[in-house]
Length: 152
Image (cartoon, one colour):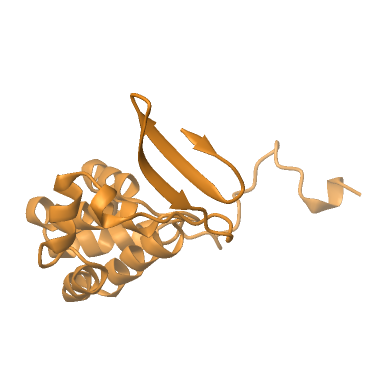
């Protein structure tokens, strides 16, 4: 492979097999469909394996699930990499049910980052069945807790 500011060239056994003009914007991937592996090309053609269809499926589960799916795309540099993750998240409803998946997504949304593994771990650990932590509760009184007056 050879590249410079303008182009990327890919060689196989001394023969150039691809030439791409580089995009000028940062943190963005460009993929030509004909350069994707055949199974990736097929997945893009399957009904239900595009952003709109996956979000519609998520909407049938609940609002937290739609928010989770949307965040998976918005927080990604390369959006297509998240199709499989979103599809996998939606398939978790077959094992755990719609209500549990919605509860797991709701719990995951309390964090700063969301992904398939986090939602799956919440479901496997049964955390979706537990009440959400309440952060506004005051700390209990204890000798080792000095309070704000100690630090001045």
